[in-house]
Amino acid sequence: MSSAFPEIYLVRHGETEWSLSGRHTGRSDIPLTSNGEEAARKIADRLAGLSFSAVWSSPSERARKTCALAGFGSGAVIKDDLAEWDYGAYEGITTKAILADRPGWQLFRDGCPKGEFAADVGDRADAVIGGLRQTAGTILIFSSSHFLRVLAARWLGLPPEDGARFVLDTASISVLGYEHDLTEPVIRRWNQR
Image (cartoon, rainbow, N blue to C red; front, side, top):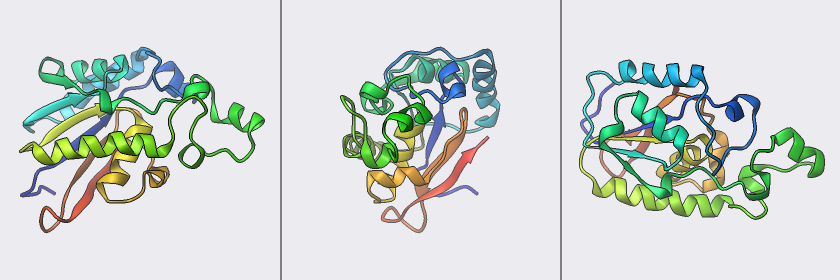
């Protein structure tokens, strides 16, 4: 379903060893696996026929490589606010391991020691949304799961903690947009693989 209003295409980076094993990957630069590279190349076919007024990428190597392999690297603008959640002391650790030391922990509710909390990520998402609303046309964004989930929540006017309600697979495509007019932000498509 196409829209007469601008749309924002969100692409989660391809698979990495850490995304495969469930390790929290915030600021570490973990390369794409061969499967992640292949999935990134296939994004080009999935976006064929679309034109974008801007392409933005997280500064992470995994997002930039996904962007490049999908055929959009030459025109991409790196935006620091698109970086994944800073997991601080939980960087590289699985949720299962965190729960062994901190039963009941939930990322979106409790945040990370020496890292970010949902409100911090929400502030960055709000800055990105401000830029999106000032840029005419359809925009393509490459980033990471937890940041994009918070971005979707904030797009809808929900608290950043509600990003917990959205799930994103690697190399998935989602689309934010509007319904009847620019005062009605919606999710047009989510987690398409």
